[in-house]
Image 1 (cartoon, rainbow, N blue to C red):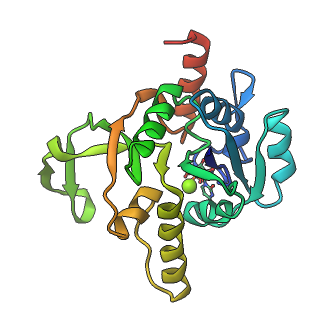
Image 2 (image 1 turned 90 degrees about the horizontal axis):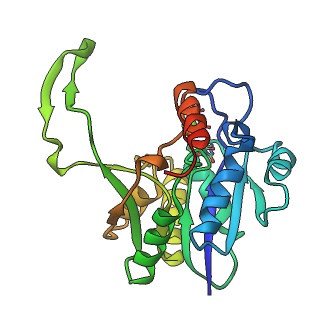
Image 3 (image 1 turned 180 degrees about the vertical axis):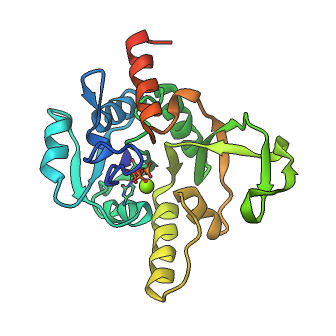
Length: 230
Ligand code: CTP
Ligand code: MG
């Protein structure tokens, strides 16, 4: 049986603003996508499918070097990119993770915890952390209309883990809805599974699984790599 991972890396990295795909940005001499794959393999993943920006497949392959990974072209948004990778999963996959290339410093222990929870029988698993900031609801022109009780809230990271039939069914539903012109509100794979009525469970996330989104995040990743293992 195979633990497979889909690594969406097909985004353009507009907010990082390097003028090239974010997955190819370098931290401590290694591209984000290569670091993300190394973390997954260290956490117990056997097979990896990386989703590259269409036209940049060779650049992603070069960044991956000798790492064993299939590379497939992605789509206009993240949901479509993950969907594009489903057909490339090995036939005997019994656990599938979806992990953002941009979360390149996710500790292997988080990967293992997600795999273990799926193996324990949970069809959908997400790493979650507590929300640190106070949250407010705002209305027109930014006026605060309410303070949100954050005790029942969690910030969700990747890798998100699924039994393969659940992930396939979740994307199948999203694909069908889109083809009919309907809205797909979910922005992550667990959200698509929730839309199917699947119970999504949490395991403890880790601050180092943060998503590199802005130049500040890239500087933070560089500092963490320079500082060495925590
Ligand atoms: N992603 C993808 N396909 C897309 C959009 C995003 O595979 N069409 C991937 C990104 O490569 C990233 C992850 O999904 O690893 C999370 O997306 P995000 O942080 O938004 O990355 P980008 O879309 O590249 O960044 P931006 O939104 O700033 O352009
Ligand atoms: Mg994006």
